[in-house]
Image (cartoon, rainbow, N blue to C red; front, top):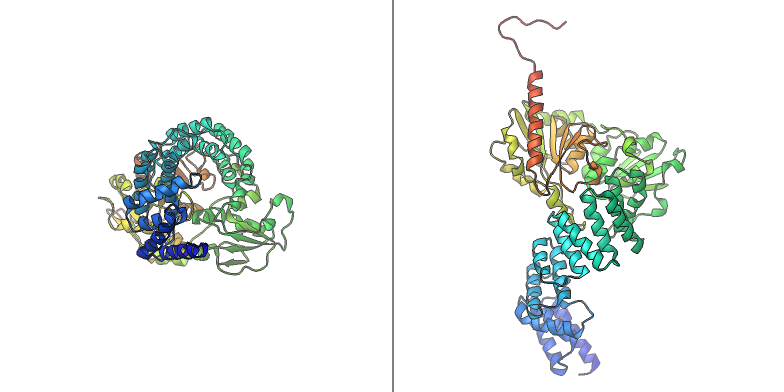
Length: 539
């Protein structure tokens, strides 16, 4: 077969594969292979076609031939996983298993399969696949990642230590070891591991940001802020003009007449936490423009001193400096001792009055949030959500506390659980009528306390000065620091942290005790009408 005819047939086969015309794709490949039976390109398209048809056992020998023909390339199962339109991940997993059955000692294939499983939030299955892999550094690193996603952080430390012992060259093993050591509170060891990683890859933004998180969690914020600015270089970030990034205010002097565009990045909680700096910028003379998504626009407009609040799709006016919300603490040189005061957000009194009529008026009014909003665009977000989120059922012990009235503040897909609360918990759910954070603030204004996992509602309540009982995961976020039950960011917030990864029972019991004390205090201070004598006027 001449080269032009071969290219035409191969192109036709690939086109048919892309268009899901499996029979035609297979026929084109078979025609090519009658002329050259070992053509790796035709074999690859044929194997992918048969696999995409859902016939893993028939595809496996073909894909195995491709893998043997190109030993230095990735296994063709990876091509299958990357196909567009996407092949269902169940079918990809079945194909990996079929290929492993033919080549059980292909450790590179086994590691590839483990990566695929980890990418699709299946750490248990990944560990099972790795159990029969070689004991090299890469296998140990993947095992550590799976263990970490399962909350087995101490076991993960052992896996990562073994990985860097077997091969100390790759920076990823050191960075992963640093992350686990940070979670277990071994800060100096974590920083030493990060230093090893940075020595090997000094311009890797992931490693720089990870080290900054360890420093932030330890309260060493002055050392951390410069490293944390590397988050602006992370993949998938919207590009920002770094040459116009707001520098340290100590280097600027007067801000009179200077326009600063402050931009929301990701996560409502970050923006709610750091919007406290906007009025401070305005007080220094800056013309402050806040760029935020629609759910935050009404609330942001209540902050004093802002020149404008615009949406994320709006074209910003000309400005001198831009600054992501998360970069504001760095610009102000914030330390643990100099966090700007809260409260700094207030509910609209008219909205608050409107919502009051829809909420309980008796007892201790308790807002509940059991899950944060998922951010699937962020790597590792699914595993993080699994660790930070509770279930509504986890709040069942609160049913035993008298005089509590529960109000759901839950949004997103987890809100449906409010329809079936635990036995003994009567749950008022106003959130179906909520349009944005201004509405949520008005509801919180009518509550006595908010019980929440680490999500935006906790930040909003803290920003308002409302008492917050924070359910904090074992591998807590840096902003809640280590070894503390209070927060410099929110004086009204109390931290109830997991003692064991994944186990909410102990912190929920402690919250039940704290709520009982609040309810008792509330009942003791309530005026009692005396019915057996005339009332006396107050002096």
